[in-house]
Image (tube, rainbow, N blue to C red; front, top):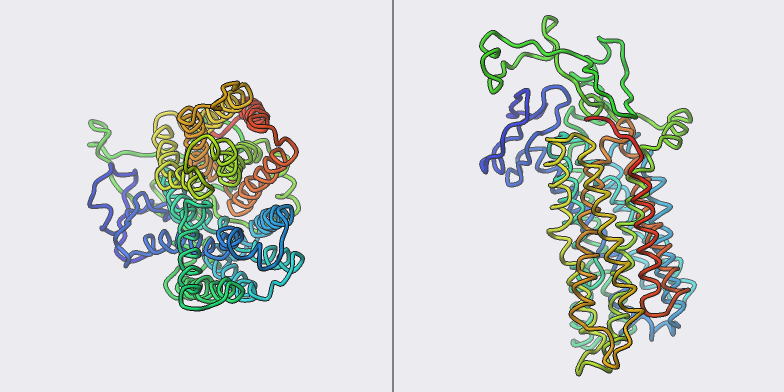
Length: 523
């Protein structure tokens, strides 16, 4: 256990001092009840910050092409619009494949080593980005840079291994939301950094041909390698120490003592163990005597698989069990809708606004359309963490069912608003076109609940197949990308204004409504 950590039996009430104090740790699984955000000497804080920072810098290369394509790369490589769209799909497809593959690797080797490895591997094609000279070489480069999209999996698995069920939704959503600020099309740091750097290089005399290539060598490459080194120096595999020592937990000793290996897949209400109170505890539920968990005369309450689960290597047997479990597909299909629609909005909304209003609103050019779209992405800084936070709040009262219904409610509201927006665009007969304020308001609701849903989803994921959290993070994350690809294809084959949106809205509503029937563990 990390030095200086405290170990009460129950999660403490929130106090501002927890932000800089040592982590307060669950004595059973050594996961933290609190987020010591400002205490960088604490390994729990370092795991948190290295997790989101790694995901953030991955965007500096993964999303570096889209900001530079319109002004520089498209003309330099003589690309058609179709080839640009194909390169975007190639990048998404690569990330989908990598996230599937990375999940089992996280369970086997730990999120820290996998994260560092992905950043180093992604740095190689990032350094070679300047060698692209036509559409085909661009496809190859973007495919291998898509490796960096796989960093989302160890990002989520890392914090899931370090933070307990009372706060893991908030923590997972924070690292996901802060990391996402590196990308998010025109709303993220990559857009600002890469376009500003490119403009500065051109201003000092570089040609367009050289400037965009130099941009990749100046920012993404060194940042990826620097953060990979920081992970290896300052990071720690697991609260127990090395990843190979992750079984050296009180939780493992408890389950071994009871000769029981717990795999909960449905609503379970029985307590596996009982908790004994001292005499003074009989008069006050607020007073809990802390006993060592290895005391043979004391039993501990374990009401959730999450309390005792430790990542296991994927086997054929566990792969079949995971694949056949409805619990696997609950967050997976929900994330296909929420994250898939977020990707679709980021990719399509600017062009849709430009087509609708460039001739109807004076001065409404492509840049202005892009900045209006960036509002949806920027909201992620607050909305995704809020979705995870609400998941933790409802968990305290209603257990895992609370997280499930909150996630699905977000998906349903998102789908209904997307459906309404699509019908409004398709049915508008006014010569001045759809009202701009109405369009922005309706799709702002879509974006907000999409991002709420993303945060809520990874508050639920740690409760699903808890012994293979890496695999679950990989499956769910990859299906989010699959949703983006599916919805991009809908826009490609249904170019009529509004029609693509209401088709996607129907898909989202149906999927989230059907998922209501899936049972979840009580806790």
